[in-house]
Length: 165
Image (tube, rainbow, N blue to C red; front, side, top):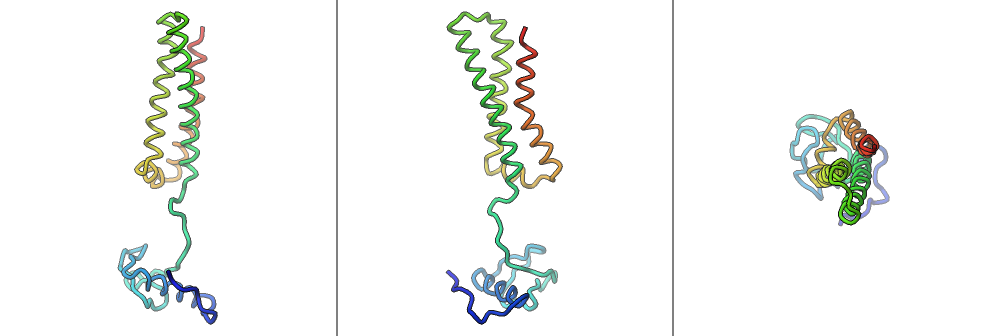
């Protein structure tokens, strides 16, 4: 653990350079975020010696940009819950009440398929690979995926209403 900053630490950009040097003392050969050149302390002028980009020490999230992930997972979870409950309901009714098979396939099969597809996509989305994939997409792609995930329960509901006599 690094000791706290001394009371006589410099102010302004000198303080930032001081913090950067302390960071690099604790983590030698840390790569430059711009050019991947290994950085070592002291770093004159708080700039990378290879690309000359200015450097600062910041606090960041371990997994940034989780908003689209949460919104997409919410839509998929709603679709999974909606279609899963109805699929189980139609199956139980068909088994115990003598629901005609033609009607069973018209109602239950789309719900089982919806539950399986939304469950599989949700499992992929919340996996480490899925989280990384969604974060590396452009903003417009993430927005479109969120809209599709949020619209899926409505599509399943519309399909159920269309199948009703």
